[in-house]
Amino acid sequence: MAATEENPAGTHGGDGRPHRHRAIAAVAATLAAAAATLLGVGATALASPAGASQPNFGPNVYVFSPSMPLSQIQATVNAISAQQVSNQFGTQRYALLFEPGTYGSAADPLFVQVGYYTEVAGLGASPSDVVINGAVNSTNQCISGSCTALDNFWRSLSNLTVNYTPPPSTVTNPPCIDSTEFWAASQASPIRRVDVNGNLFLFDYCSSPGYSSGGFIADSQFTGGAVINGSQQQYIVRNSNIDGWSNSVWNQVFVGDVGAPDQSFGVTPGTQYTTLPTSPVTEEEPFLQVDGSSRDSVFVPALQHNSVGPTWTSGSTPGTSVPICRFFIASPSTPVPQINLALALGKDLILTPGVYDLDQPIVVSRADTIVLGLGFATLVPQRGNAALVVAPNNGVKMSGLIVDAGPVNSPVLVSVGTPGPANANDPDLIQDVFFRIGGAATTPVSATVSLLDNASDSIIDDVWAWRADHGNDVGWTDNQADTGVVVTGDNVTAYGLAVEHYQKYEVIWSGQGGTDIFFQNELPYDPPTQADWMASPSQDGYPAFLVTPNVRTFQGYGMGSYVVFIDTTATLFNAEAFESPDTPGVQFHDIFGVWIAGSGGDNSIINGVGGPVTSTDPGIVEPVDVVSYP
Image (cartoon, rainbow, N blue to C red; front, side, top):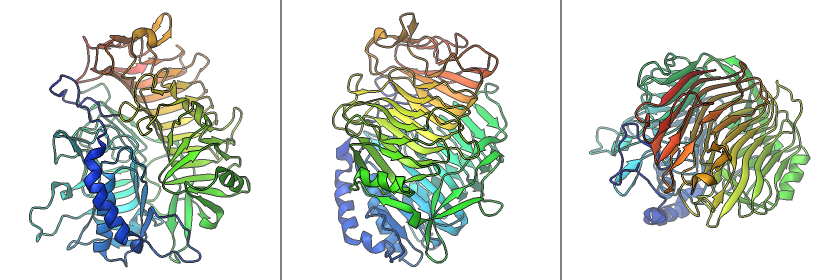
């Protein structure tokens, strides 16, 4: 969700509107200069020296080992953090990778502050192989005296153990951010495959007001403390062990978790929990690892059905290890034809950190190809082309990418699969792939559809498609996009789907037998008039989630849409937040609408049922729920 999200208590800024936090590049100028000096002086010395058998991931991948002086590791991560903490639309990208071992101690803990476009990951076979005594934190940003995490996007934490360790008693007046493990973030900030010993705060209480909104956790364990949700308006936790969960705001979804709160959506205010006992079909994200002989590989976890809990807590994660020699390692300067030739000849692909300007699409033509982005590698089509085209319906695994719209309209940014049958035991995977229409660009950009998923039996696992509501060249005619996600494949399963601010339908689902578990949406802020935002001459607005009339079977769980009409002077109405065929096989569970700001709103939640949710009848403190439809 973007900078204008409503806080759960309904507090507004002095102008009566929710707090806005526009990108201010000058805020980071001094820190960036200092960081550049530090990075230039000593950073490369901290990277593990590349031997003949070790891959070259480029200058923005830092590989730390336990033998390195902790003071130098701390100085390096501090320098990167200083550069990235306010660098919302910058071009720098980083991966901070930790080889197996222990980092920090009670006398000298390691504190890692994670900013934009920064991936922090362990390189072990299990999260227990990399232990950080200290904390790995994402904390508030403060602009004009207001401190929140509402714009804390594009960062990640994975495959390690965090033993929260406070600063030693000899340290006087330690900063508040060192007082616990924080992951105060919003969309596109996944936690995967971690073990946190101690409390985990999903909001930052150190500075006010501390709002945060949106998150994704999978394949993780939390022991010796609770997960404190705090101000998080919506969250999904999948296949994890939870010692305790503090509260909900509007939409907390748990699927396949041990220790999750009981199902209670729409029952008691403050306990908006949607809880599913098992995950119907999952396959965890591939990850880099280093074995005891310093050999690099990518581990690919196995497919699971009706799963509960993490993959690694009862022994080794089932799956296969792919040697690094089978990967083509690309950088932003690598010509696309060279990448495509390597893919066609049977190589898998690693995209190292950076921004890739593409004059033609990267084409995955072979089943079971792995496409792994490091440090939020970012693809930007330049000539109206797609950024990534996946032809096979079977076994392609893509993860860790940002895809931006470019200066010439792209009909589709990422296309996955082709209409027709697929192998349900070897699905295509779309994991931690994030789309942007504007915000980072310095000229107007457009893309009609961000993600087109034609692949039957595919799995969508943490996707945020965002038509930017702030940043550069943002406006109704500047950053144009019809639809965030279109699903045509049958039996597609989605977890953690967030789609926001598109100008027509946000999601169009036309495949049979689909399942969506968690959906978060904000409608566009900026239609100039009602006439500019009409699904038909007789239907005001566009539903955020459309299940098309041909569909006979679909299941949706824990789905919400928010009204924030603040970049317009018009009074805007949306006939319904969700639209679907009225048939017994198409079912929605625990769906809702919330009015946040602006004149007008949703006249109903789904197909004329539920609501209204408007400026005159807002349902702002508690959402307007439809527990079951039909």
